[in-house]
Length: 210
Image (cartoon, rainbow, N blue to C red; front, side):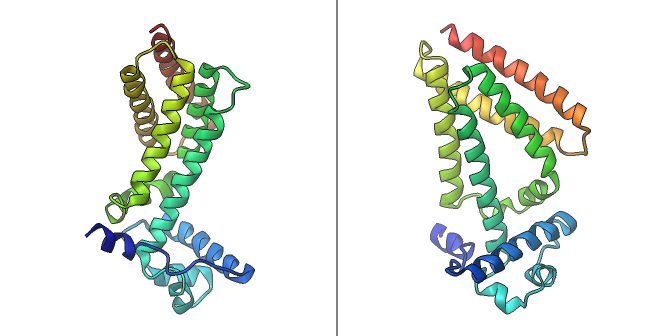
């Protein structure tokens, strides 16, 4: 059952030439615009093709259905989130608390910047939440956070670090999602991110004591 579901949301083929790459990029950009405007329920391949200025047949060369487009958008979002988290947490030029603070600010800002699309993708989540790529993305993010905590709090027990990795990741995600549910001013975003970072850095300080 899993393999059939995964196959239905996979891209039909990968672009090999510059023209094909540009076509796929145009389709995905159009998909973001349609998703932000129409939401997941009114998201269709016809609307995406029309927005991209291509035929539905051209779209189907790369994406067999709307689920495949949504899954590609979500996969790209997972990858970007992981890369952001990895780049910040592995940057040893800053001490661990400063890295955690940077992560909180960057994540909450990105949630607010992309709130409309992220909300629509959440609505479409049943289409792909059990896909292997979803599990791999969660595992990669949890692994990076665990490695960061091994560096930041080496004297703590492994069980405590595992619990902390899940708590920090889930807290940032939940608070970011809730906070970005309506438009926010830049000063409001900065103040909220500071408050969340203060809370998590205090937790990290306690964890480092062992």
